[in-house]
Amino acid sequence: MKSKIQANIFNYLSVDNDPIYKEIESVTKENHVLISNDIVVRINLLGVYEVETEYEHERFEEIEGCYNFVCDTIESKMIGGCERIWRKNN
Image 1 (tube, rainbow, N blue to C red):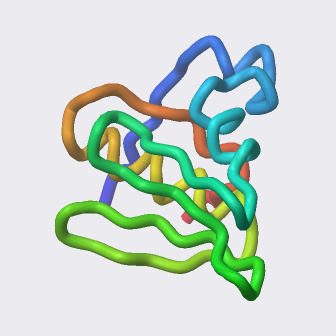
Image 2 (cartoon, rainbow, N blue to C red):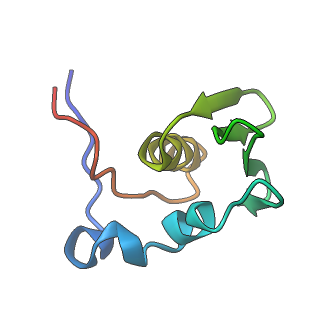
């Protein structure tokens, strides 16, 4: 199986400059963010990231997993893509 690699400006700048990463990073237990009109990211009372879409509700202990899931979801909707700097190569 071939892996798909998306090159974008964040390959060179760093994920810290990615607007999607910044949005996720801004989430607190008191607020949530809406990404691309149909992806809600929040932090629950236990400090776990939750990502909710029309069809899925996933939990992530770390921001990296949350970011990767959001990027995959956006990419699958053909809205755009994100760099997945934490993903291990298979």
